[in-house]
Image 1: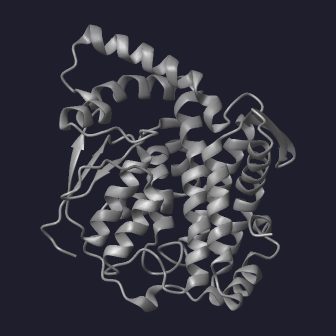
Image 2 (image 1 turned 45 degrees about the vertical axis):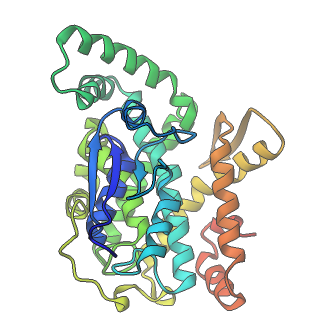
Image 3 (image 1 turned 180 degrees about the vertical axis):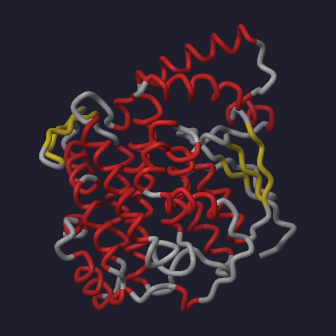
Length: 342
């Protein structure tokens, strides 16, 4: 990759997807510059059209006057430009397992992050205090109070977007705590999800964990109690530019440790039924849906983007050769994740 081809990234430190992508860029040794701040204002100043929807982070590649979002396709674009220090396994079956893990991080672990940030009083106060200052550390006190109150009220009112409500709160909290325990056991065996080198799934889950472990007090306390290895893992993933990687650092799918299978059982417990029911509601033009998750009722508004995510997962599976589809089916058997590809 041409080291003069510097990518511009717009984001904020409290954005898990911004942290996901910056850590990935550092690991892959891809030159970039980061602009912290309000993406809308920055893009308007640059004279660039706003991507729809406008999400963080925003990427602007060198010699291109186009702002793009959505971390998963951006990662695949970076892979198409260079395979050096790839975060996608060469083994197509393992790459598909990685794809599910990455989407789990982006679409389910983000529920943990949003819930813990805006559900508990201490966390609301923490986020309300700090987030406005990330846009301007010199914000005057009156403006700071105004933005704190406005932003906190706005975000709390949007908890429904990720499905956090009184019915689902206990389900989200139990899933987060189970995941911490599973990660503690997994990292006793291997330093990353799929071997001795990080995949895009590591960076996806890391991004959410930078907030759950590094920013929000309630979820951090739980992490320190249940998974000190996860706390250390987050610190280490911040910058892996010095890590040496080899192709044989990926774990063979058939030799994956039981701890990885157990993580997929957790994925099948919450993420899968939510994704399946959401897709059904979207195809039926329903505004809201309900289903049973972990023995309790889950209710939330339909999320069109997650319906697209499920469609992309099925497309990825259908693109595999028959032998690799069989290997994936064998790995996912009895995890609850079989429904994603049925």
